[in-house]
Amino acid sequence: MDAHVNVPQDGNFTIRPLDGLMGAKIEGLNLSATLEAPVVHDILDAFLAHHILIFRDQDLSKEAQVSFTENFGELEGHVHRLPNGKKLPPVHIVNNLDPEGRPTAKPHTTGNYHWHTDKSYHAVPSLATLLHARELPPTGGDTLFANTTRGYETLPEETKQRIEDLRVIHSWEASRRNTGNAPATEAEKKDRPPVTHPLVRTHPGTGKKALYVGMHTSHVEGMSESESRALLDSLASHTTKPEFVYTHTWRPGDLVMWDNRCLLHRADTNYDMDKHRRILYRTVVRGSLPF
Ligand code: SIN
Image (tube, rainbow, N blue to C red; front, side):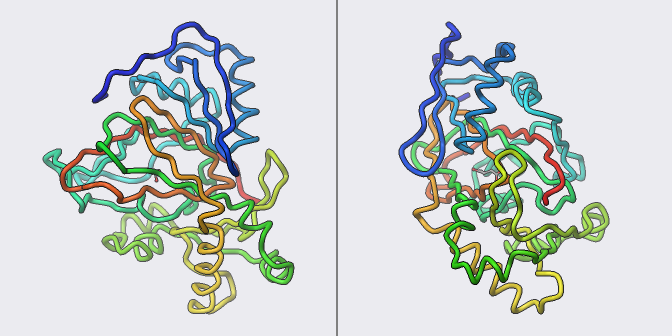
């Protein structure tokens, strides 16, 4: 951690919804400690209600972050490999570093700077992602979240009816293409074959419908590529309009946990990437089959 953080010790905590569409701030908890079942229950209730939880003033080791994550389900491993071919450990380090550890505007992947929902190129995609700030630029390096439930709910009735039963192919290959990253290798394509998900998914916890789009989408089943792209891009633009977006400006010690079933997210390049390191530890809770 690059800054001192006063980790709370007394166990009294508050959950305060943010002004606006989503998000709540949780203060007064030490996430490195074992949490009692009623506390985990309160966190889960807040998670369903607010979709983005911001825990302030934390200083978690990787092991403590894994233990905290496991309160909410099975820890999801990674299929990605590092440039040296090794598999990523369960705590993935999000960063803008070159192989020598220097900040760069051209890190080996820039996927996190495009709107996406985690692992939608898996048959069983991610439920929650937890990101813990370890080193931050002096300003900027924000993370943006778009509410895909509101995106769906505000579509014209005619569009809702048109897209209701459509299914979309998501793939790692399409993701690399959509984001201008190096094409997927043959080994990656074999590891991560394309999968199909509903375009409108129902949140298993709230019963609400949400758009399931983002950078991992390839095309709509049974639709031409150009027609698909126009539809998917227009839905993604709609649901990422400023009125549906919360921008998180990181503070040292923040741990943010979000719901991939009803949000898109992306990092912002609003910092001097060649000059400042931005390092966050990331853990993921495995989800269930979207329906
Ligand atoms: C992610 O896409 O999981 C990370 C987002 C970020 O870098 O802020």
